[in-house]
Image (cartoon, one colour):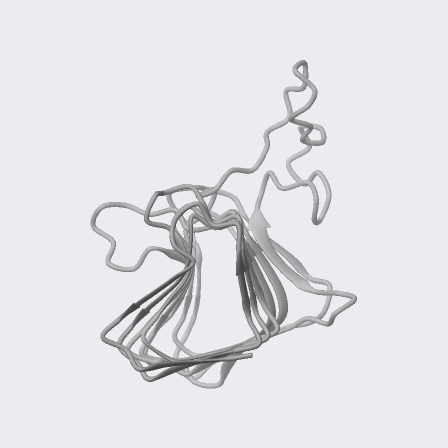
Length: 220
């Protein structure tokens, strides 16, 4: 995705099939803005990946500068960093969007005039996340506003660039079978009701779980 970003228009549908790697080329922009339906359909063996252009772990050395090797002091290859691209933004007009078996890395670039600061933002839309990994975001991994959260069998890890970074920021909904590991902070719930089932919170340098003004049920 180039510097001008990509917008899925209202009433349009974009489906991404297993094994596709999508790379973003610029830090300031781009965003992937979803006004229609966005169906990301990876599989366990062939996840869909959204990542930085410099990320050689997926899709190979697409910028042709050599393979990133932080252990090699003589290497001139660019390496990805948190905030290498902005975000996937799901707008209120979006319908029937879903993320299944997806890896999202090195997003979350934010600016002071931005209300929502996460690698994926869901604003007043119903979106499901199953088998999703979000890691190395500059701010939050996932931020859901004015909508119910629906997350299962997912991983939020290494979202640590800012002191107030969370793996997930949410208001209401359900999280099942999900791992929160080595983020600055784990899960922030504002509102409710919320159900957390069969999920784990480990190795955070801040708080694992923050609940404010919410009725939260934790099981198993």
